[in-house]
Amino acid sequence: MSGHSKFANIKHKKEKNDAAKGKIFTIIGREIAVAVKEGGADPANNSKLRDVIAKAKANNMPNDTIDRGIKKAAGDANSVNYEHVTYEGYGPGGIAIIVEALTDNKNRTAANVRSAFTKGSGSIGTQGCVSYSFDQKGQILVSKEECDLEADDLMMMALDAGAEDFSEEEDCFEIITAPEDFSAVREALEKENIPMEQAEITMIPQNYVTLTDETAVANLQRTLDLLDGDDDVQAVYHNWDEE
Image (cartoon, rainbow, N blue to C red; front, side, top):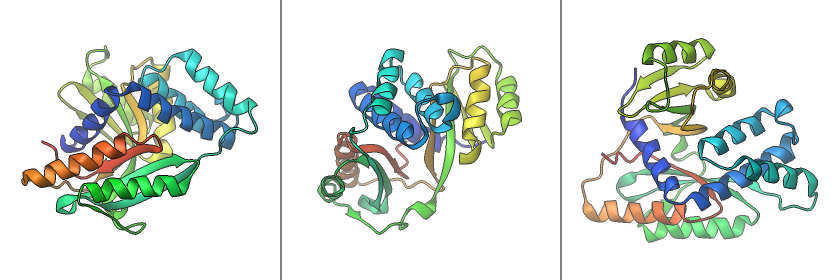
């Protein structure tokens, strides 16, 4: 029902995360802390926390690590307060980039993000300069190897739960939802013991850009690597067609 390009984008991000489990655990740990502070430590009464826990499990975070993170956030009134910040800008060739961060020091984060763009011959833009060309969606990836259901059965289950779109990729199924329906769809799949390789709210480009200049590709990759290596950065979205 949909093309392969957006899957390539998210798969690249997943592979980068797999190469640095410590980074993804840091990211999820901060998201747990924010979710607990905003909605409490009981997942039954905190849908955002349930979503973060599902993301943690999809990334193989141990249950005791998850539990410790929740208890720490709930029991430590003096724990670090993280703020959501978003940056938008352009990489080489006009590639649109959105950077989401959770930080306890906005000046530090802003300086690091700006440096990453500059070193890759890109530039930070104003709020909204590229986000208009992305759609915020819930995205769930189900590995074909681990899923016993036929594609049609999984598709009907997802659509019945409120999903917008379903596509079959080479090694997994991709389910797309509206942001407000994401939790309901994810929980419906969870109740049926569907193994989710990835489940999160993401930004999907409306169009993709191909880079043919090797220098531009190298510069863009440098920016993405610098952003990936920054502990404050939670997610990086772009419209570069890497295939």
